[in-house]
Amino acid sequence: MMSKVAVIGAGSWGTALAILLARKQQQVVLWGRDSARMAEMQESRKNRKYLPGHSFPDSLIATSELKYALNQADCVLMVVPSHGLRQVYRELKPYLTEGIPVVSAVKGIETSSLRTMTQVMQEESAGMRLSFCVLSGPSFAEEVASGHPTAVTVACADIQVAAAVQQLCSSRLFRVYSSTDVIGLEISGAMKNVIAIASGISDGLGYGLNTRAALITRGLAEITRLGIALGADARTFAGLGGLGDLVLTCTGNLSRNRTIGLKLGSGKSLDEALAEMTMVAEGVKTTLSCYHLARQSGVEMPILEQTHAVLYENKRCQDAVADLFERDLKEELLTR
Image 1 (cartoon, one colour):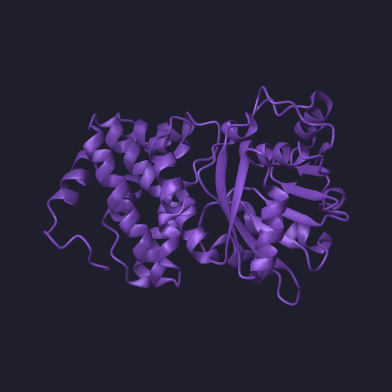
Image 2: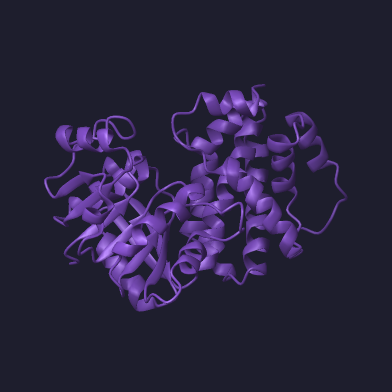
């Protein structure tokens, strides 16, 4: 057992992971930027705002002090919004112990650089000896905190490090598989949020299960094409972090990204939809970054393109659906 784990980011997913680890009698420090809120969480032993109803185990400490959170930490889990990861990582980097695993549980692509989260951290860590991992899979925070059986994947270029994080995070009802396909897991985790917005739009327009199934299946084809173009293992996309997470996010009522799509499909503007959200829907920013990443990589991604048009070009949802279905007919199993 690692002696101390720092969880950076006190939203619903960061809190759920912190609770999961602390229930294993692991010493866990949960960091958030808002000092007043973190003090209240430490006092109440709950995250009332983002994960109400789940008490903190005794071994979980909430803090707003990065130096304290990182002091003697054997592993760091990054669980902050993708657009803020680089800045937070820059702030914590001076307190990192060399040689430890740094695990991204963030699903997104940085808009300015088109880099994945582990690539961002690698870029910021020039000259440091660290092992970067990614943890991803079908895992709503509420269900993990409630102890529902869940399975995810952790990937690292060094399979021994992946195995160590696998052991750290696994529990009786939280099963972790290991992998070396970091890029595949990150592309899957980012893009599934985009397809979930499209799925929500479909549901909001009143379309049925046929349409949703088509979106999930063809969405997976797009995700796979992009991942392979970036060097991923095609098998990853049939796994927990690929198909598993995609199905959950496109169908679950707890999905923030599907919720955004539902609001858009029912006639609300993006600004109106975002104003009604209390938590970050990563897919909105990720649609923009993945759109440019796909163009840069020369990969055709029609669902991504139409979702981008709805979000950023004020295209009507009905017109986006029509344009998807009126494209030239083609073979199903084409790889491009």
